[in-house]
Length: 139
Image (cartoon, rainbow, N blue to C red):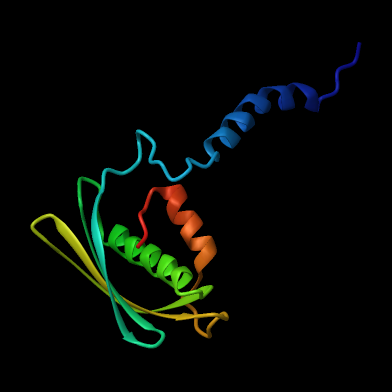
């Protein structure tokens, strides 16, 4: 009896592949037990001009970082764009600092109905979905 050379390899890999796919299952916006421990402390939104918005966010916790603060501001900008009926935002600038264990980000974004020019653009709908999957609150 001759066995196909790839069959044992596939049978060996299949359980690992299935486990890997299970890890990709969305959490529905709920953080898993091993998710970062971050306390999202709120967002202040300030309209600077018709399509120019400032977001001030604060967070703390064992896993809070400058990157987490930047992500929190981006999530707020994406949701805000959707609230205003726009589909896109473009990052202008973000300042992040930490004091006493609290990370703060002061970010400015433009919002627009069409994809703006520039390198740091975000699709609001896609970004809001990603934020929900990662357990990051929006506005």
